[in-house]
Amino acid sequence: MVAALLVREADDLAVTPRPMARRAVRRRLSRLRRRRQLKTTLGSSTLAASLFASAGLHELRIGRSSGGPAAAAEPLPTRPTLPATTTPPSTAPSPPGVPSSTTTSTVPGPGFAASWSGDLVAADPGVLYAEGRYHVYTTSALPYSVPRFAGRDLGHPGGLMGDAMPERPAWVDPQDRVIWAPQVQRIGGRYVMYFAATGPDGLKCLGAAVASTPDGPFAPEAQPLHCSDHYWAIDPYPVQDGDQWYLLWRQDDHEHTTGKIVVAPLSADGLRLVGDGHTLLTGTQDWERGYGDGGIGPIENPAMVRHPDTGEWLLTWSANRWETESYATGLARCAGPLGPCERISSAEPWLRTGRDPAITTSARFGGAGGMSFVVGPDGRLYAVFHAYRGAGRDPDPRLTWAYRVDAEPGTGGYRLVEISGNQTGNVPVNGT
Image 1: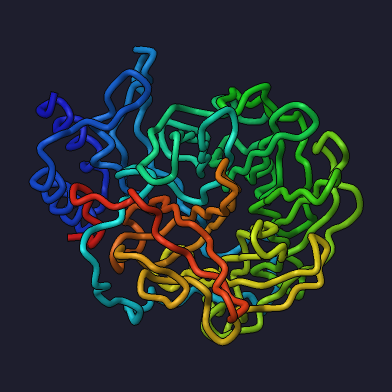
Image 2 (image 1 turned 120 degrees about the vertical axis):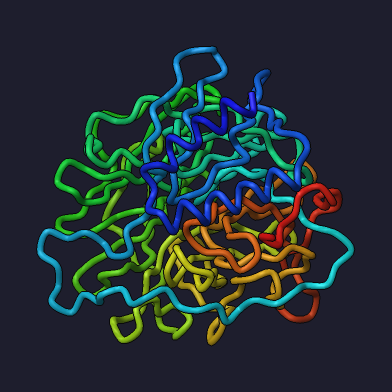
């Protein structure tokens, strides 16, 4: 089996640029040395090839657990660094080179914190607790349109269960079929998935899909939920206040070409926006500036929740460049889903690396973003987010991490705390 995997991997590396291929071979051989077991559970089958998963390179041709034919390899999805517009503003920034690391340090601790997705690519995670399990849905990674992970608790890595939405919507551009940042909630007696994808005109739009169970398969609506003329709309996030559901998302416009956070009410079935988006937050801080003098942003990946202990509405968002260790998460408190919101983190992000004051962990990671929230059956609030191991950046894989969200008595702040049992000596996180 190992020989067959290596042959198939060689085929994929043959089409990878030579410096990246050499780096990939070194990294993957290192992983093989660290692990004697090549087993990652996928339902009742084995996904040994998951050890080789890495964003920006080529993933192995992995057959589905049903024993069907293997899917052809193609590049894993990467998010462009600038929003596509049909008439780009003349002031749109040009991406500079990837910045050198300035946020890395060794965090003391007795062990390593395991990523909830194991070694599998798992970016922009959306989390749901339903029917006795945690479900995490992530941005497309071959061969899956919407990978779904599941587990009984967040203290141990979740297992990859398959594709939650195997059929993409008809409105998605066949040349760019990536599904971004899926989020699922139970609305009106069924489960609704919100996501972003590329429409036929090349712009990013919001979409919705429905299913009778959290496992799927989710059936996409025939038309987009929301598109914006000339600009992007991405990263939808549903939030409930009483009987009313709202949707947050990143919306670009002429004044915010790399995003702002907006919100609008949803219809009772969750499949229609009621009114235009209302601005909750715009970028103002240097740590949110991903393109030097080109302006603040990107501002994206919003999430909102009411903390069960304090009753405060919390808003998080991601900023800076997703493909670097500078990607970070901000925190604000809001009067409700429609705002207004006041930043808790201002001059510095709330979370960027494993050494930030906002987190108690033994893990080393960088570029933390794409956060979402869930209240567990124990009544505690938990967060999942993606980050690169160590001081990593693209093309290293973005993995999903899970932590408890605790209020800090007397400070008005909040801290992410490593979950008991979410430590293991078998899963290294320092990227070596």
